[in-house]
Length: 363
Image (tube, rainbow, N blue to C red):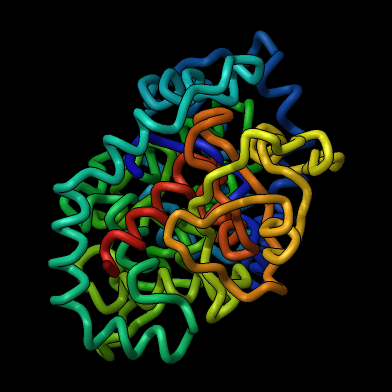
């Protein structure tokens, strides 16, 4: 999705990813120590002079992380402060954590619509050979990979036009989430060192790029070359795009053969208090507080749930319950694989829509 960074600040940097992120964690700690001074000091105002001074500070940290001096010399002098991305970031929902939760139905109507389903089926058929190979290698269903592509960029029709380096540097300078954005800024320069052309680094205002809308650090770790040309081209290659999405889901823990969830009808006599979730998630708490506690499919069936498809997954599969439009409307039993979709973007509406679009594409 090109609509920014809802849920992604914790998402794209988790999911079992290690290795190349060591440098990001290191510089996040360094950057975090500097945030209070840089944000509150009257000597460093939110202006172009302060921004240029900040870039010189980042230069040393980027060199220490392994970015080539020639890359820094080519990039840093071209950057100016982008106040627009700072304003967009301040408008994000996490800035209003107590806002009421809206209903899912309107979101579903615009994200699992006939046009997106139709185009998804066409993409699915056109890429069937590649998809089958990737599913055989990763265990991630073909339709899930297509649905992610569809949700992120409408199958590549719009991938964003913000200059990633300028956006990330501006967001890092603003300071509220400096450890995150500075790490991604450094990762973007490492992409250039790896051979990605500077002019290809465009995307969402929050720094996601390409068909799957990967953050730079995720690209470094998980982007794949599936067409054998020696480049992980998530901008122009359908093969690389789908293989990279499949690799992401594999690394995030996708369980082959298990559905993401099923739509169910909840009996009027159902006692929700008996399955209330008593745990508080350290990540995306507003997302997970809408889920019940875990039960097996056999236990949910005993509680009177009725699958709308008429089919149950294996009795041993664990699931939580969500009623995204409230009692009396369609509810969903969500498995571990739903949590993997949330790892991609920590939003219930996003994850439900990906699952439902995938199901519609496969029908």
